[in-house]
Length: 299
Image (cartoon, rainbow, N blue to C red; front, side, top):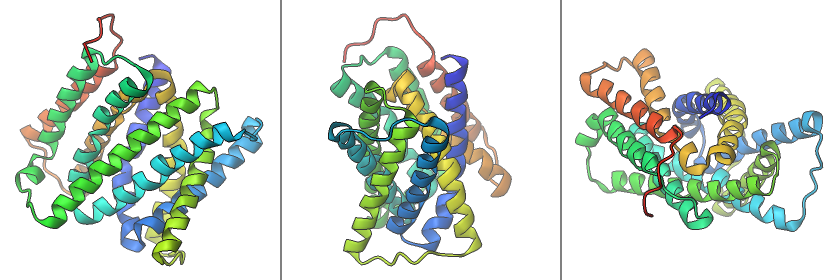
């Protein structure tokens, strides 16, 4: 991976590694649908302003392009996040992180099915090490797993949310193939995602009253600007340059960063098991992201 891609990988990993806490403030202040609506509406407005002021490219596209914008918005910026927020209300953020790490496998097979991209041994080995690292990181929560209905529901919802995120990544990759700038197709995708959330919320009878508590406003600003505009620009750029399968390895690094932050603010004690988990996660990423001249493994 070249230095530019490594920088983008680091940016989205660092930012998304801190959003676990910000999301908690949102789900405590309003419903998942309303929180997602405001987050992506604000992000879409910012991105359209960037397109108009700085990129200055034509924002008119035929229906053929808008189909992919709509599909990316529905899966990436609506269903994925609404279900993730709901999952966080049912299970701990650690277990949500474990479910989201399955993005690697969904993207791996999605790229193979839809774009005929071979699955290399590096990706398989890296995914295995990364998953083992996640198990070590959150072993305490996994070992104390209580198989009640709420927990099982939260895990299933988290996995379904990750599956929808992967589908959205496939449409984002298609937008790359059509040579549409990342900032442009993300702006349209987030606008459509916000509109889908609005329609769903109105259908469900949700109140869209805007919370004005300092914690909600701070989390909304951080999630909209850093967690959405900046992080998704970096991530979707990676999807176009290294593929959705390898870009998904941010889902392994994010929980590691979240755990490091928790150690500073939530008094988490570092144990040999925790340290081993971090080492395995980083080793898996290094293996998966390095260039290889190997023949791909049979799919």
